[in-house]
Length: 380
Image (cartoon, rainbow, N blue to C red; front, side, top):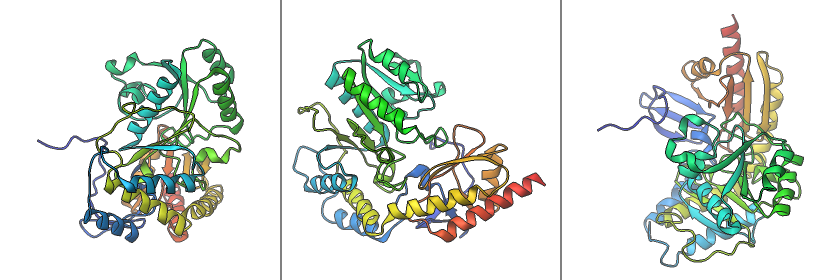
């Protein structure tokens, strides 16, 4: 038996990592500006993160949710305060897809309705319900296709209202910023319009912050750049555990949950909560949200000076770069010539940057210089 290859493999074997640096088995050093799909939020093997997990491992690593787990309360309170959602409840699970599945279920339970509105270019996960609301027919199996899902375009409030008026929509799920689709930022008035329509027609607004949350944009959640927005459900994962599997759903206090409505075996285990607390503590103590904002603004300014780019967009350290050519060969040159990891996107000309929030200015200078060199090399 051999492992199933999930993605096309880069011919590099990382064996050690620290901060934004990765070393392969030959001792070659790489700059990580992708963070394993936005997972590495506070930097690889951060000392406080390692210490928190080791300490917890020496006490108790796991027991099920059938007993009191005080560290869950500690994590929930810390997350509530740092995210400015202290009145919400936190359901802990293991991944972004699982968080989104449970958010969909909560919306359907609460409304008694069975359909979802989502948006073109959306990516919400690969499990049964959320793969159906992901805008990629290639990964939707016949088994997944029975879900009632409506895909609309950003900005189409008339289309949203027309569907809501039919009375079958349980909720609207939208990413704080579309990640896989190349860092597409929804317009603030559009998202506020969605919120108002949900209230009017008794549907639930679900913000998928799996990739765009946890300080990546310079605010705790990307939707917090929109004044006055309070979603019914917010999903989190990726940067929440800095590599340790953990996810969650922030649930508005208006929801009336009962035992058995949601359940999980591994979710909220002691080790996962220790990892989650370590991440929040480092983000707070090292002011990583502030760093994400400063470094992201610098990168965007420098990108505006580079030839061969057609556009660049994003917030904080969630950046999409559109090239005047296919991105694959450029990313390959960055890896093999300059030893810099970057990310791909649905658009074949787009590069994604999702580095650790602790990234330092000198690393980003190196990226800008290297990108310019690769683009000029290919032009010549």
